Image 1 (tube, rainbow, N blue to C red):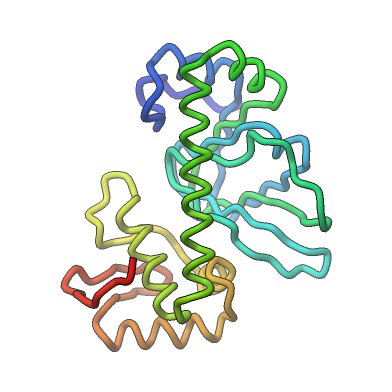
Image 2: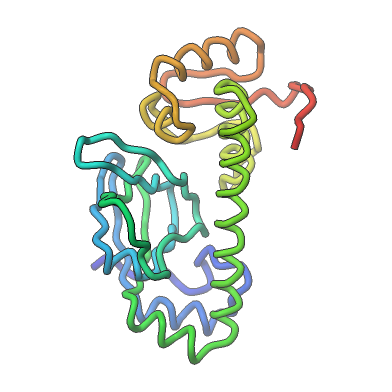
Length: 222
């Protein structure tokens, strides 16, 4: 088990230090290297997972090997904490994008904490509402926007949400396969869209790292 961070430095807006300390007491911190993949069983998906640092891709996959990224998670983002849904036999995994740290609280003690601590329950309800909002936005984008526009919006969202970032650079090694899984297209489509965005002056790229151009002023329908 990795050393626990100090409660004051947890990315948990909306929780006081005492509540943060309780989460730490109930969970364990895991340090992941870039490319590390943690398989998530149904019981572990019922527990709470919180990204402390770095970035994590939450993947779903089929037995055939086909995979999709359901969310790119940054510090303060969570997944799990709810009853696993029934349906097709999807596999789930957390893929570390560069070095990252993940706090995991097993389901039974987390449910007990929610029942005993109204402040933690309100915080968790807020995280669920934010997750739902992001899912709705991604669904609307998938139905209404072409791949290049979806890709640009993804990059701008990451640039704006990274802690201590400047809203321009994305200091993450984002492979084209990962981007394709995230917006639901082929790697070839991502490659073509990246070239078009760079040619239009909307992004710059150096290998797997990207920057968005703040001078872009194209009207956004959102």
